Length: 314
Ligand code: PMV
Image (tube, rainbow, N blue to C red; front, side, top):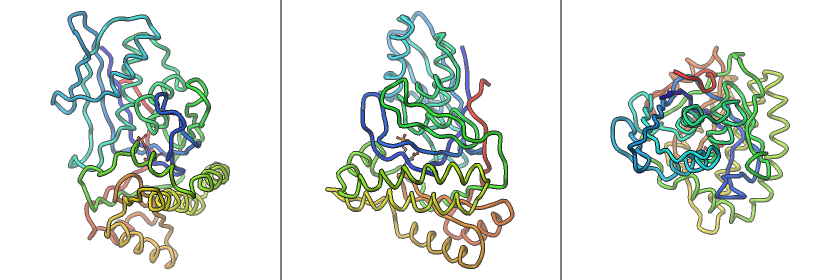
């Protein structure tokens, strides 16, 4: 038996497209910041009497084909024929709306690698986590990390940019909507890739990766926020210009963004980033985060997060 814990990460430069669906290879590199409040604990037990993998999520029997996809790869690498019982718990305040495949697959990668005797160095864990969920490749690391696009299973993994780190950056989740997302990220990306602006977004993203690494190394929260916001807005513009257009934003999303812009123009560092759902995450600093939280609390539940650690045994 082995048990691992991993935390969620927020993409500052987004992964939004696959070049290979089987191996989950991305069309661009991405940068994430692992946070300290939301995590998943996953335990893997190997027993001889199982006839198939068994997955228990938050105390309930569940099914997720990506779990067996990862385990089939592990079994193929090790020559093992054993099935596993996977017990996973999401530690997310007030549950719905925040559950994350990033923390789940990063924790699972360590627990599974350990149980089956695969290497547990971080690049190897990052590759394995990627097979389950692309963003999970970054949650293997604490603080800031970059997931290199790569061109095959071996070359597509994440590495640390800066960790441990707390130069005052904070991320505030504004939970206007706790329902599960309408369009799963894999489907959203596939549709976004049909946008005529897609190749333009990819070249922008390449430049933003370089700018973001410099901003992180300079601990420049304003630059980090400005680049992240532009990158996120670009990702959502792709969705709106896809062949079959769609939008993760809701009315509340725009209302929160407008308030964030008002704060920024009043001299408070506050920048918006949004993933595959309507909730806004605000990038700010430790001095301003309470003020920003107070300003936005009427929109819904607020969660203030700091940089968090990489995957560990528990
Ligand atoms: O890896 P997935 O399927 O969780 O997709 C992540 C997509 C975004 O959260 C929107 C961007 C990212 O890089 O995390």
